[in-house]
Length: 389
Image 1: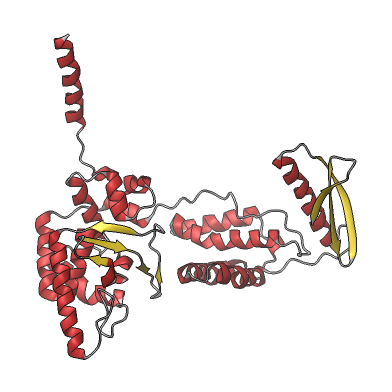
Image 2 (image 1 turned 120 degrees about the horizontal axis):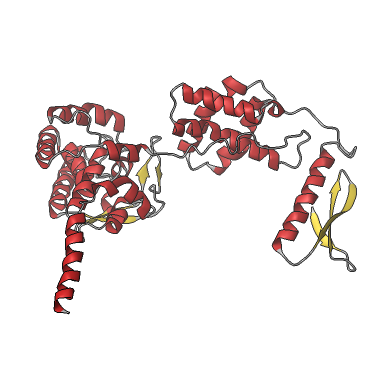
């Protein structure tokens, strides 16, 4: 498809070849030098081309639309597995939505039989079943993507006028972290001290891992992907570069950037002791010590679900904190850092949030309130100046 103008005219024309035949038509759009005019001309040209292959001009006969099952499987193969080849989690979520929800409901329907009303009724049904908005959003995302993919395909010979899955509601994601942070009650210091004591009695690995979560605020995946070269003992910091996915693959952390988290002297000492113990243990096995700070028995990635079930959960129960998740230790870190006067801007950097708004949304309610002291300070300043005058 090519846009052009004749030498004696300011009107946009377009030309293309279809099945060996050359086509040339006017868009009736005048070039006024703006980007908008060119976009409108291109839109008319594309519409004409699509009408042509649909058979509206006798060039090609229209064909029936494919079934949802055929179309979405093709989309998954040609788009998802290519564009998200480095993200097994995205592929897993899309595959779950397709196999568990979309094909059972729409598999035998043709694409042109799926209307906006059909989509709205499906969404309502899923919400009434008790699914969260986030889950419903994950379910309908493949449908939006697949219909966009089909509509953009200029070689199709069936008619799809619009994507019925767009503008079906916001379904804004309220992250589980945000919900948990607002509902979560921070354990008092003595409870956390007891938890650390019991962890130390259970195993040195558990004690070190819980200490990293509590004193550095790392996410679970970031801890299980942490390597010794990223621990700066002299500079007293941890460089967070990678995170471990549920599929035992590493990727860039959530914020898509590296960050350095300052750590207290106590955590430096705990990590040094753990490294010394690891060196001795692997020397005894006759093998080099793995780079991973928290390796499995064979030196690979740790089995996180098993580690939580067999190591952490029994200890948290003994500590009187039966519902305290490993991720909740990150909330504890944020809470106690704010209590010590850490600015939200600094905490955002340490936590690895992509913007300070995320930090405010999650932990703004934990910032110590000083409204009365601020009001008193302002009044005293004005009154003292008034007296001097």
